[in-house]
Image 1 (tube, rainbow, N blue to C red):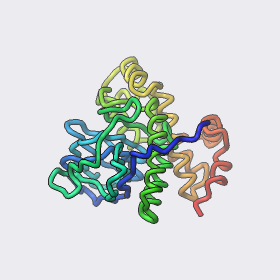
Image 2 (cartoon, helix red, strand yellow; image 1 turned 120 degrees about the vertical axis):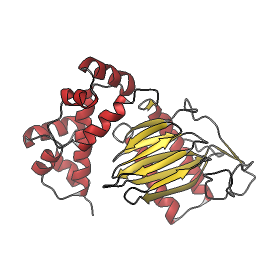
Image 3 (cartoon, one colour; image 1 turned 90 degrees about the vertical axis):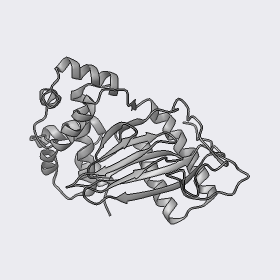
Image 4 (cartoon, rainbow, N blue to C red; image 1 turned 180 degrees about the vertical axis):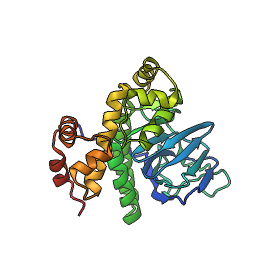
Length: 287
């Protein structure tokens, strides 16, 4: 494994969390940065241009420079989102001002020292995925937000930008672009809301009124997996979150992710993660 070389012209200029109020919406007319955005908890919708994305826990987006965005929080369980903004090319001879413009009438708008640039194969697409597809991306994002708000310096933000861009490149092969049918977005939302129930491929098909063959083709093209494998991954991802953040028993967690038999749940968990639920919890103590 090679150590990523920091890209000295790239720098992180802002990173933060934001908890929305029920039903709250925020409009941003023209964000002048590239952005990693992810949902830590709750539900909501992000509309980028004319395309809407349903966000829930551990869903993330990579957003290109210059997009108009509207956040709309769920009225019952509003989302808590986190974001990291970086400038792909920042003039090294110009002092760094930390912050990002979200409209052309703002102080940091259209600075000559800040320029966009492609990141590997990523140019103008909107990329998205689950934390399970690219765990390093979200882990690094969480660290960046903490570091930015506790001890922000130009040197550190340039080094972290290099690490982030390396993770972005590695994550690109796991993500899909917005060209895939909106049917998958409906499937994701349905599964997210009904994960504790006995879900199978037939129920997913019924939620979006399509055949098994059509759903399989969409998943194969859009996510490079099958509906059944994706659903199993979602269950295990939620189980990992519960094991890390709650004191629920393995049996209770098994039921919360829609698997009635805790012994079968343990076998599936070990097959997916390489350890048992109890071993995973022991290695991820909350305090």
